[in-house]
Length: 524
Image (cartoon, rainbow, N blue to C red):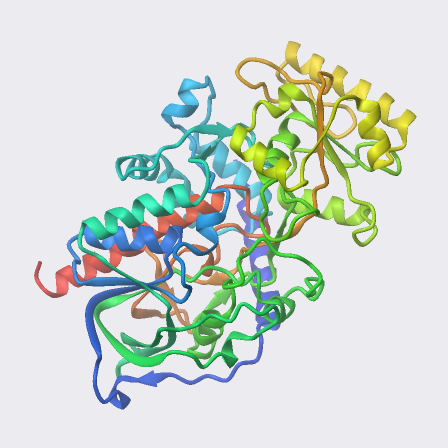
């Protein structure tokens, strides 16, 4: 089913490119013999409190490691995870069965490798996807309430399961952590990893009462706030500190086009502070040149914003056009990389944003609260007639109306033949609860998509259990990593909602592996 030889050759080329792209940072490690005393002692420490960190922490507790702590440098928990869309791609769930959606893991694997240009680590991809239904059930058992399933760009069927927002996943997990006696601390930043004479991780240097500087452009390495402490960890350390999409200087080392004027969905704490420490400690990084821009965000609001839910459904049930030509310019349901590149190619440096349009029936597919948030901030606009919409956005009217007629005819054809693909962009169409939705019923709604830096596909190279490799491809004892800090799962481009799955599956696995190794050492 997959072209393994092509995947191998492309992966080799990509790894070579990544080596040349790595920043020049001098190596230097902190040794345990230099630590006079330990201020705190734990069995395990988790750094980061998003999807991956919360899953790892709860997994530790579930597997008998009780004296553990999860720390976060920010004043709040969850990082990007908490305020992300929080949709998780899973193939084969009760919600899909309820909605009559036929899906299987092999289909999701195929979609994932296609989007990743076969540069993904196949073993990691298969583990991630086959563990999906089990992880879905684990979340439900721990209080997460998934409400609906939708189709994200690049997926062949609807499989993106949403609880409403990312915090609707992180908060239930964190409640369970506290119920089970786990410790959680904010405003604690990790400065250094501490190793013994054999290269095994034995603790970390931190600063408590850390004050993150929210000034745009401020470099975290210049922030000296907080009180230095040393934490011992007998079982191991799990790193789940996320990506570096908000770190302009670091991301430009790998993609110079991602200048400061290119907005990001990430919270300001998404810096490369931990990544740079790991690079200096000789930890292996891969695929760093692949940084994703996401095209389901609005050009009319900063950061992640509120319109993304409507825009996501707009791609599935609406039409997107270049206002200058009045014509479609890309298959609306392509993956994030193709969609973002197409928008950037036509928007003239941000002067000519595309217009995404849905009618009333299409908009009804969006949760009313999510829709109202986007409408309230002006990122989604309402028009009683199509003429009003055309005039407001200065859309080239006659070509647009002809384009709209053709688009609606394609939806009609799809309602008769599920295998139909539109002749202009080879798009297929999905029904919503048995109905195929055209753009014809007033009022009409529109938004201006604007791609923003969103996800870092590259990161720490790990085993299938989250164990970390150094640059000699040897496993670093007692060190684990998961989530966006790691690389290999997504290759060239990540499919929407695969990241939540990645974080939760591999967060769980990292916690399980640490617990298994540590429990064996202490005879538990």
